[in-house]
Image 1 (cartoon, rainbow, N blue to C red):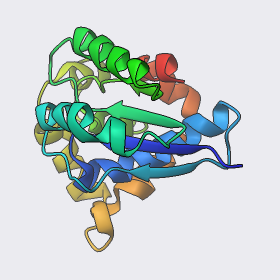
Image 2: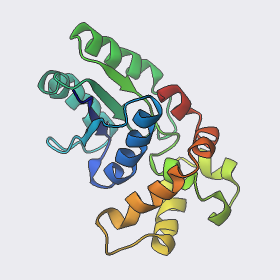
Image 3: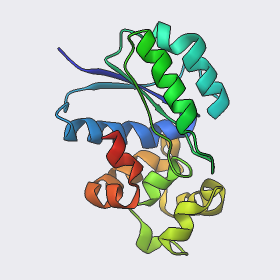
Image 4: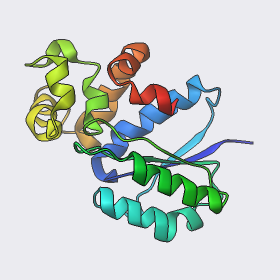
Length: 179
């Protein structure tokens, strides 16, 4: 029987192209290489607060058949640990397995972790930039992405980042906790 996982991002439109390959790799590392992984697209979350509300109001009940639900939003410069504890407690009360992990500062940082040698500033600055998507990622994607692909080539770039999975976890320690 297959292990079923649902990823709930803050915005699935582009983040799904980063998160799905990442979760495939994490689950393979955890002994679940054949997991069936989906990204919540209906209803489509439109930001952190909306995704959090969808989890409370619909997702935990509608997708309770999943073996695991992962809430993987942007941190956006905020400590989300209290909200995550509340969501995980709510899910636990409904007997739904939920893990929450915020990307510091935005999901795009997990992709950029594989390209520190191609960035125009030190990794420590990139990592702490609350607007890393606009300031670093979008210019990077314009140069190294593929505008002809869905997601602008985010999936291919993420797969390259995952080739050095250990380096990714070293640069983004929140992923070690998720794993």
